[in-house]
Picture 1 (cartoon, rainbow, N blue to C red):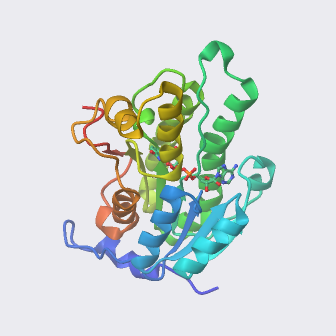
Picture 2 (cartoon, helix red, strand yellow; picture 1 turned 45 degrees about the vertical axis):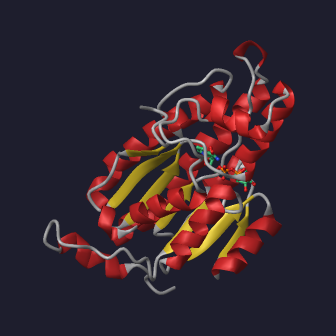
Length: 267
Ligand SMILES: NC(=O)c1ccc[n+]([C@@H]2O[C@H](COP(=O)([O-])OP(=O)(O)OC[C@H]3O[C@@H](n4cnc5c(N)ncnc54)[C@H](O)[C@@H]3O)[C@@H](O)[C@H]2O)c1
């Protein structure tokens, strides 16, 4: 296999502060949940900057469709099957831990199996994939880990105990990865979106409109965007642009950070 991504090496010796390229030609990027709303937007954005994208998802057909769109490849994988991930070795330059699910329930009724599933997909699997990717990244002295966290990695909301716990855990994992990876040219950061216009969120709006007997626009304005300074959903492409920048050499001094894009929700 040719050594990919070696063009990144000079950036490490370049004068500090000198402009670095934002292109990703020659880089291999793995995106989990790559068939979903945010994952597919990230796949398109990274591919548009020249990366070869591996679209990983439990929905093999949808992953293959996104891979075909971006000239990449697909990997059908169920991140709940963690034993298979323990012996994995990944030769990628960019890892985007993005796959996620949600369960909403009061703590006293929260199904323990659902809690474990969320922690497995959204915390244990990212750990195992980072663990599998670091040896190659360390060997080449360059790597980018990008963890799709959430405003719920930094703040809590009622009825989302597993999701909030998993995202807070992911924040910690990302920072430890940053600490250990620094001397090897590997950065690790979180991206923290507010509500993004994806099928997942559009479904939640429709459900709540039905439950409360109010129009979808009212759910959006009064429930989801109540705390927003800017009263609209984040577009997947806006998050994908941030991910692309974090994946590039321009972000070389950014590590252990969490980048909020929430229209002012956390403010
Ligand atoms: N949509 C939002 O408003 C929003 C806000 C903040 C953070 N996020 C985070 O962004 C990420 C992507 O969310 P999205 O909105 O694109 O959701 P989505 O449902 O559109 O995509 C999630 C993808 O993950 C895949 N997936 C789920 N379980 C899997 C498993 N066991 N193995 C492999 N793949 C699996 C699904 O098949 C799907 O393609 C999640 O981590 C989510 O928590 C989303």
